[in-house]
Structure formats: structure tokens, C-alpha cells
Length: 334
Ligand code: XIL
Image (tube, rainbow, N blue to C red; front, side):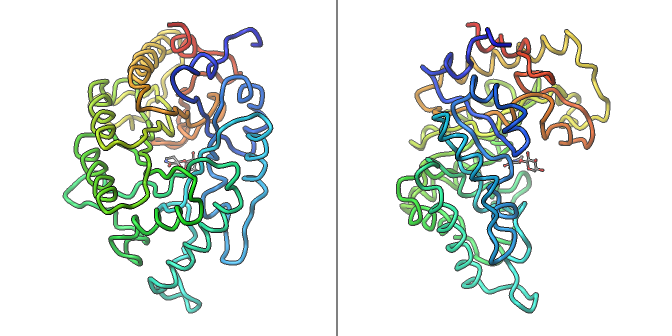
């Protein structure tokens, strides 16, 4: 596959092209990464439970390897993520007796964690997903009922951004979320970020995860969300793009158990979808600075287990053998 055009070169006039990488794919997908991507995100290796599994123990080896790889190849690094309800040790919120820790203790731990991690990578990581997935999906509530909210209270998000800004004054700080184009949820994300900006909180961008499907969300829904967020004057990154081949048929949210054969017809439908997505993203290059795929090739994708455990999916531009799919050509040839 040596004589194919470089995706990131093709997109240089538009935005960076990134990929989520893990310790394994850093090796197995090395050639694809070097050729087609100019930005990387750690799929898991910088999450609290991985990089800071116990109060007094940090595990930097995998994150270091990723950052060194990026430096060697002149790639941008998106830091992911600091404050999230998932993949964070329960002990962060507990005292020595196993009781709920006080706000003061948890805040001090957050400061220590952020200062340590952002400090270590301040030369190499240009932007951070400071807070991930903090608003509710549906219903009438606003903020997700997480340990962070329970211990630190409503302004934990503002606090997290201030702490991150203090630790890395030059880093761009993002709020990142999924279902980010759904009308109700995008309105919540908009309100959250607008409120933070009003209070003078150092927040510079919104990460739209982009875990999309063949037929959902509709293009105009995505377009509306982009325009709404852009009206806040913040930067936009598509942070975790992948397109499940399992569409939202009959409103199942892509959760049907049926496994589709990845045949030519499906490959064509995926290519068509990617082409229209990328034409839209290109048309908004003034506000979109970066588009990161959540993975590199179909042999290593979290979509194999989400939302249906064990169901094979083919959401990326490179196939299980690392060759370019029709979807690759559909976004490169225009
Ligand atoms: C996922 C990883 O891809 C999986 O390997 C892990 O088991 C769970 O997390 N939203 C995010 C990402 O912000 O961090 C998640 O990554 C996918 C959804």
C-alpha cells in the first residue's frame, strides 16, 4: 500500500487528521500512522486509571511512548482526558477509611494529578480534553450525576479548567462530548460552554466526538451543531470520529444484534457517508481545526464492542489488513 496518497497531506489545507492510538496499534499501525496522520490521541493511556492507577503511583511508560513517537514524527498530540466519570479509580473519591472524601481532598488530588500530567507533557501536548461527557444525554437534568459532581459540586467543571490552565497556560483546553449533534444535548453543551465563557473560565474549544452511524445523525443536524458551537467563538475539533456500519434502523440506536457481512454494497454505503461527512467538514474548515478518528484500521476498533459487545464493525478508512477502503478514496478524491 505504499503508493497511495497521504490522507493528512491531502487535508493539509483544511485541518489536521488524527488517530486514537494504543500501545499495540502504535506498533501494528505504525506505517499507516506515519503516512496518513499528523495528530494522535491516546485511546486509553492518559486516562486517570491508566496513567495514575493509585494515589502515589503514576504509570507514564505508555503515554511517554506515544508522546515520543509523535515528537519523532512531528505530530500534534491531543491529551485525553482529565475529568471523566469513566476510567477513573474509585479511590480518587474516597478517604483512608473508605468513606466519601471531602471536596477539599478531591480538589487537591485533582490539582496534583493535573499538575503532574500536564507538567510532564507541557512541551508536547498542545491541547487537552479537560472535561469529558459531563452533561446528561436525555431527560430534564443538566449535569451528569457523577462522582465529580457529587463531591465537588456544580462548579467542578469551571474548577477543572482553571486548574488545567494554571498547570499548562499555553495548552488549548476543550470540553468533549458525544451525541453532540442531538438537538437537546447539543443545546446543553452549548449552554454549559456559554456559561463557562461568561464566567471567564479558560476554555478554548469543544470536542465533538463524532461516534456516528451510516444514517444518523443526518448531515443537517451535524451542520446545525457545528454552527451553533462555532457561534460561541471557540475552536472545534472532531475528536473521536468513526462511522458504524450499523445504522440507526428503526430507531434502535444501532444496537441490533445482527452482524452484517462487510460486502461491496456496505463498503459503498460507508464510502458515500464518509464523502458527505468530509464535504461538510471541509466546508467548515474555518472553525474545524482537527479531525481525529477513533482508531486507525478496522482490525483494532472499540466499535467491535460498542454498543453491542462482540459484534464486528468496520467504521474506519483502512481495512483489517491495513489497506485503503472505498471510504478512504471517497474522502481523498474530490
Ligand atoms: C474508549 C476506548 O476506545 C476503549 O478502548 C475503552 O475500553 C473505553 O473507552 N468516549 C471517549 C473515549 O471519550 O475515551 C472512549 O474510548 C470512547 C467513548
